[in-house]
Image (tube, rainbow, N blue to C red; front, side, top):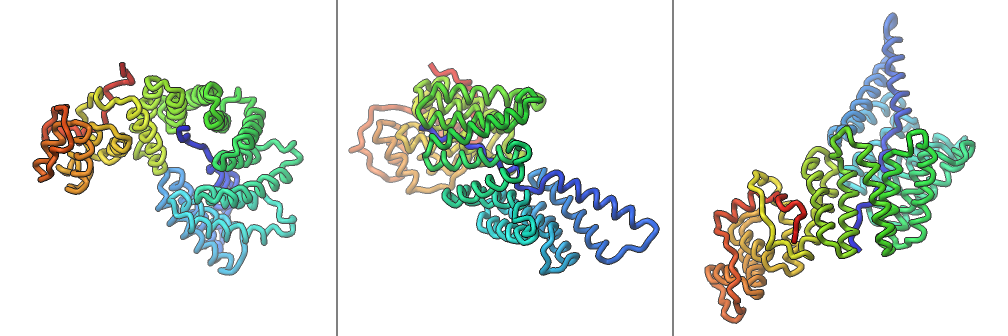
Length: 448
C-alpha cells in the first residue's frame, strides 16, 4: 500500500487560549494597578515575563519557531526570577511546556522530551491536592505521547496517550465524556494503532473520534477541521485494509469538507493537498494511474504555492513529491513529459527527489537525466564522476545511445553494453535549462 499522510493532533500542545487570555488579563490588571502607585520589582518582573510570553505565542502562530523559542526561554527565566528558581508555579510549568513544543516543532525530540517531562513533573506536584487530575497534566501527557510517536516509540506513545485519555474522561465526566480534548486523544491513539499495523483498533478509535467530533460540531453543520481530519484518517485505515472503495469514500468526504473550510483561502491549503495526495495514492493502488496523476498534480500545485510559507510544510511537500514520482515511474511518464520554462532553480533539489526515485525503479530516461546531472553539475547536485558513470551505465545498459556517448567521453568502454540507438535529444545547454526550470506542470494529468 502507498504511504498516507497521517493527521496527529498537536495544536493543543501550546498553552490553551484560555491560559493566554488569563495572562493578558493579568497584564491589563497590573498595568492599571501601576497608575497611582509605585510598582514592586516582582510586579515589574511578572509584567515583563507576561509580555515576553505573549510575544512567544505570536511568533509561534507565525511559525517563527526560533524566535518563539527564544521568547519562551526568556519568559521562563523571568518567571523563575519572579517566583523563585526552585519554585513550582503554573507560569514556570507553562513556559517549560511551550519550550518543549518549540523543540518538537524544530525536530529536536530529545530536548522536547526533556522539557515536557519537566513540565509534567511540576504540574503533578502543583496539583497533587487534586489527586493529580488536572487539564494541564493531561495536556503534558499528550505532549509526551506526541514526542514518543514522532520518535517511533509506539509503545511509549500509546502509554502516554492512554493516560491522557483516562484523565480527560475523569475531567469531563460531567459533560458525558464528550469534549474536544477527548476526541483528540482518541484520534492520537488511533494513529498509534495504525502505525503498529493494528488496523481494527485503529478504525475503532478513529470512528469514536469522528462520532464525538460530529456531536461537538453539530451546530456548525458538522463542518470542522477535526471532522475532516478524522475522515482522512479513517480513509487511511481502509486503504491499508485493502478496502479501496471505502478509502475513496472517506478521503472524498474529507476533501469536500476541507474545500468548504478553506474556500476563503482559494482552496490553497496543505490539508487539501494532503487529501488530494491520499486520493491519488488510492487510485494508484487501484491501478488507475491516470486518475492518480491527476490528483497528485493538484496536490503538487497546492504545495508548490504553499511551500516556504510555513516551516512545517517541508515533510508534507516531500510526501506529495514521493507519491507523484512513484506513480509517474509506474506510468512510464518520463518519455511523455513536457517541461515548463519557469525560473525555479531554488527547487532543483526537490525536483531531483522524484527523478532519483524513478531512476531507482529502473526508468532509463530518469537514469540518463541523473547521470548527466552528476556529469555536468546540473539539477542541484555537485559534479561527481563516479555517480555520473554509475547512472549513465544503467541507462546505457537499457540502450540509450547518448549514455554510451557520454560514458565514452568519461573514458568508459561501453561496447559490451549494447545499444538500440535510443536517442535523447537534449544538449548540455538545454539540459541545464531543463534543470533550472524543473518545476514542470505542463502535462495536467493528460497521459494517453
